[in-house]
Length: 144
Image (cartoon, rainbow, N blue to C red; front, side, top):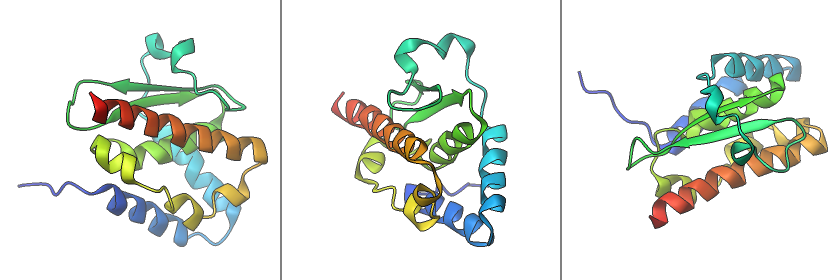
């Protein structure tokens, strides 16, 4: 059976749908924490300075695997449970997408689920830094 590859927008829409069923922000935080728990574990070797995302209040490591030349695949981890959930949320959308798709993507779904407005200013800045770092990798991959 052939599995349909979802576009980056379809993956984002799926997350918006998941969040739309939850009325309360405590429930939405719970969902984010659950996503963090489901995050593919990062190899300890990748928890190094060069993989740390600058501008995050907590430590967030983001490692890009070069194993699939046509698509982006990241592993990440954080020392903070909410932050780990946020990076997991981003990776659910961008992993296995093409570099061009990620470059062109506007990450509007983050506003649709109301994430930025429910984060502290430092966490919101961290979220912006995560998105920038993912886009940087996409740009580098597209250029190579």
